[in-house]
Length: 454
Ligand code: UD1
Ligand code: MG
Image 1: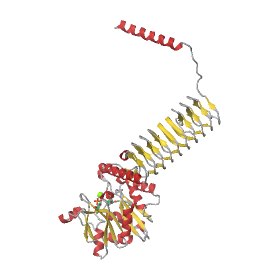
Image 2: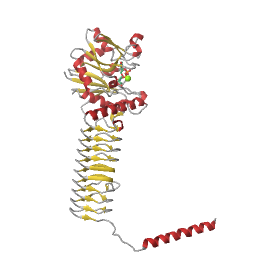
Image 3: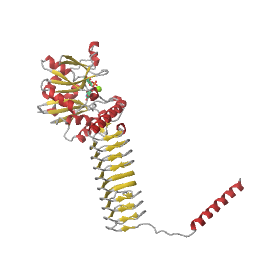
Image 4: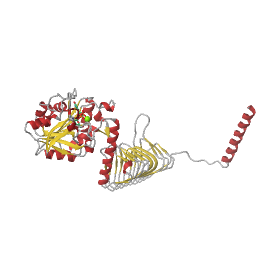
């Protein structure tokens, strides 16, 4: 059966106290909305409809950034979850499959859970995702009879007996799309909140002799975010899950709780990550790499067998080829470091190409910025860039060339050449001693003068 997603993201999120709509607050460097959309995308949906309302333009832009094919619809007034789903009707016109309703502020639903819901649709007309709540609080309660879900009652409308139920509503619902909209048509707003509750569709379906059932998941999956404190808790939960997945996939983490990754971080097996490493978005690390302590990576690629750090920083566009070495206090930006090259100490390489087997000495800087524009430095293969060289871009250094220590290289260096670009040394015999006694005499005279004046 083909599927379509309806992601509810119109709510304001008052308790976030923010100019940003709640669903755009980030977990693992990605808006919560993207997490919900990604979970749903595992079902290869035919359509994905995002219902936006509060700050709709921002939500729509974010949805399109993640999935250019996502459809967006607007709910101008937030009259309840059923009303929100109803806004997706036109966008699902002609769609003849199952619709799955997700919340944009519930980022942890697993793909497997959604697959289980789709499978349950084979025997149930309406499938609701429920969970046993440690503290059921204000969640909607699932009223069941045996395996059948009879109705959902919102906390505000529940009797004492119903409030004692611990099986709660996550909000995720699956039903044939045309049936879903039919049922929603029958939902009213005569309840404690004066809202159109999506949850009412279960009772309506049962009264029509249709079947409804529950798929259960862990409470952790249904974790929603309503405040900054909950956002921080969600980030922690995300990191814990991501670290566990990395380790399951054969990555060694020496102190898992000190590695921070992004929602799209990919690390190959047998890579070792030492304590205190931060990985931002769009980072891929191949197998068998070693990332030493205190590295910070974003938008970068690390190939097999690379060793980097401690204290190395990869900025956007950094690409390290196989077996590259990047040492301490090295920053690399928008640069390709080719196979086996070494950049080991106190160096900035930006907007550059560093050829195979090249060695960059300590304290080298590619001077890539003239205050207005960025320029490129191209360094060939097996080059030796002497310590303290400043490579003033645009400039190139040919294969197997060398630059002398402390050179300021402003002209291209031909293949195999040694570039010496610094003032020649001039030794003045005995001058250091003379200079020293002259300076001491001057200091003593100045002190004598001061004492007299007192
Ligand atoms: C809802 C469920 C409740 C469930 C709980 C789980 C209903 C009536 N209740 O309650 O049974 O236990 O979620 O967290 O469905 N939204 C819109 N437009 C609206 C209203 C809501 O887009 O008009 C979106 C919100 O942005 C949010 C989601 O729908 O992403 C849920 O809305 P919320 O107000 O949080 O519902 P709850 O009261 O928590
Ligand atoms: Mg809620």
